[in-house]
Each structure stands twice: as C-alpha cells, then as structure tokens.
Image (cartoon, rainbow, N blue to C red):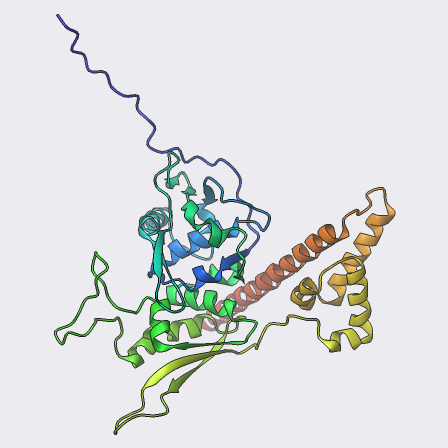
Length: 380
C-alpha cells in the first residue's frame, strides 16, 4: 500500500522581531525636499513619530538603507501618559497605516507623477511589533530620497515628537524647509495637496464628484480649510522656532461684483530667517570675537558656530576650548580637529538644548505643584 502520509512544510516562526541592535538617535531628521513636499496622506501622529525615529537613524555617512530599522516603543510614547494596552493598539494601528502609505511625487510642471510604497513587506524579515520593539523595513526604492540626499532640509525632534496633530507635524516639516527664507508662501490648491485636503478619490485613484459634477474636496470652503488645518498648528507651534503668523492673499482683479477670493497663503516665521553666516556683530564684539577665532583654529565650522553658540553661550564654548587644549597637552592628542571638535561642539550644543527644554518642563511642574499646594492650603 502506498504511503499516503502528508509531508508538511517546516513551520516558520510568525515573527522574528527581537531587537537585533540598539537604536542610536541623533535627535534630528534630515529629509529630502521631494519627501517633505510629496502629497502625503493624513495618518496618525504615531505613524509620523515612527517614521521620524526611523529617518533619525539614517546617518550622513550611510551609503544605503539598513536591511531593517528598529526602535523601542518608549521612544514613540514620550510625552504621553497612555497605558500599555492602549499603547499596543496605537502602534498596531500605526503600522497598519504605514503599510498602506504611498508617497506621490510630481514634477513642477505637473506633467509627470509617480508613487512609491513606503514600507517593504516582501522580505523574510517582517514589519511588525514584538515585546516593545518595532521593526520597520523601508522600500529600497526610496533610498535616493533618504540616503545621501542632494537637496534636503533638517528639523529637530525635541519639539516634533510632542506634537498632537498631523497638521502641526506637516507645518513643522514644511516650515523647517523654508527656515532660511523666513516665510512660506503657497497657492491654496498646492496647500490643499500638502495637507491632504485636495480631491477625494476612490480606490482606483479616480476623483469623486458631487451632484453638481464638481470634484469633491475636503473642507471645500476656504474659511473651513483655514479653521481646521491652521488653528491647531498655530497653537501647538507657539513659542517654538516655527511659531508663525498667517496672512491670506486675495486676488487683485475680479470680474464683476462679489467678495475677492483668497488665492494664496503666506506663513511668516516670527523668529525670522535662520542665520547662515556668523554676524559681523559677533566678530566685532571683544569677547565673542576672540572665542570665534579660537573655535575656527580648532576647525569648528561657521555653520556649527552659528547654530550652537547661542545655546552654549560663552561659558560653554570656553569650557570646550579648555578641554581640547588640555587633551592636546596630554598623550591623547587630537589628530583630526575637524572631525573631533565639530562632533564635540555639536554634541554639547544638542545637550544644552535638551537641558534648556528640561529646565522649562521642571519650572512648569514646580509652578503647577506650587499652585496645588496653595489651593490645598486655602481649603484648610
């Protein structure tokens, strides 16, 4: 009699998502302009946070994307007070969203467009979550926009990760790209596309139309668009480097009677354009000028001096100079000043920013505690 036993294929573990390396974050996202200004679909803030933490792991000296990226769930939930069960549901929902995300790219003349899926779910290594570890596989076709990007903007994570609105996150990303200029001016139609308020489409990408035959758009009324997409970002970004004023720009020529139509939006950064060069006043000042000369002798770049000297202040810069001079006098001589001193200067600057942020949080908590104590005392 023939052997009719069924031979089963070996069972592959459903998930192989244990932590394979310890993620290192630099606290800054470097993002290609084509990604910043791609037509992105609105997703949860948790999906945006996951992607920010992934891109944060890509280094300037990387030549290709990692096979996969991993991060602890705690790095996504900073600043929240949600419980473990809710956190799991949020992350699972975010991964479902990211698996469906497509970034759409369009040429300036609108004659060519294409899209790329964000994640790669074709590999043996899985996209997923296990025991507090999130694993992400990026589509390798996106490498030109994420690795060695030729035209990019940078934005810090210390403010971005605390935002509670997708619209606020988009403003944060886009205003960072225009920080050098000091403002962002955009047509209403382009703004709608950047904020996922453009034509509604069906599953085949065909534009939906209303009873009047006109394309359906989210917040079709411009005043509704302003109220629902700008008010929260203005509130959340108040006091940050991306605090902005909004000005509607109306059409100048209108045939016939009627209220003039808003055709453009202008967002003016309250802090003005970011410095590119060391101001003459810094060089001419008797104290700061001599410090800058010494920093340059240690090969610290002007770009890093402009960015981090204000937060380090004179005391912080002098402390670094003193440490480098002491190191050079020891048997641990600094051979590569450009690399070593810039890395140390940037590291100290970022730490000073974090310390300043924590000081504000501590002061706020102390004020809240003091208020509670006073209220309790008044009840006695």
